[in-house]
Length: 258
Image 1 (cartoon, helix red, strand yellow):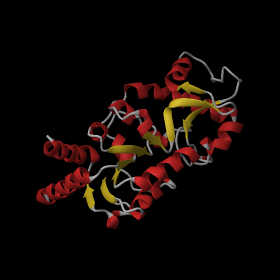
Image 2: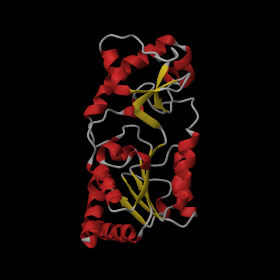
Image 3: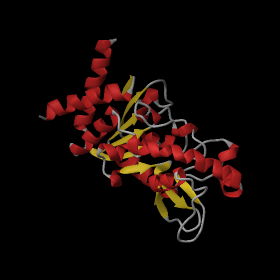
Image 4: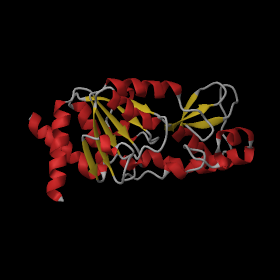
């Protein structure tokens, strides 16, 4: 088993060495090893399917909205969360000049903390680092609002127009962000290596991105615990934790480039 893993890692190393434009796609499997709270189950802050925290309910139900604000207090923990070994390994690809972009389903901002430039991170499900006014669109840092809530503020409103503030994430009932989705599709179609990390591709349109890459001739590397719908089309398929496998691949690449 160990020999088989070493052979797969070596194949992945060669693909990375040969690639010029790598797109890295990350799911929750990349961030679960960090100290981040489980944002997928946190009310009102992600693509939850709970009717209570769906977007129409958030807008129309003050009680549900206040409950969301109480939950958002927890996200002062965002500032304490640290990137995983996987995040730092991805940032190494950028230092090598091989990373075209990161497309992520995660909302924690840990890719940026690890050193990937902001402009190279496409957040398909938004970001917990920011709040948006639902009326005028003004952005507010989440940590500033969370601090006010922690001091007893009942509900924060926009200082410009008095509108409601909502986390800059995609909630159930909201359409996916058109700009980010279009940008992700463009980069996926133009890469020569697509690395699918820690995602089982259960959410659309995000799950279409590796398909666009394959259709355009890119190689596919998958590292994930469990199965994904495109396993059979992968040039390299490794069933394992991203934080354990990816650093070994990066180390192999760096040793060849030294």
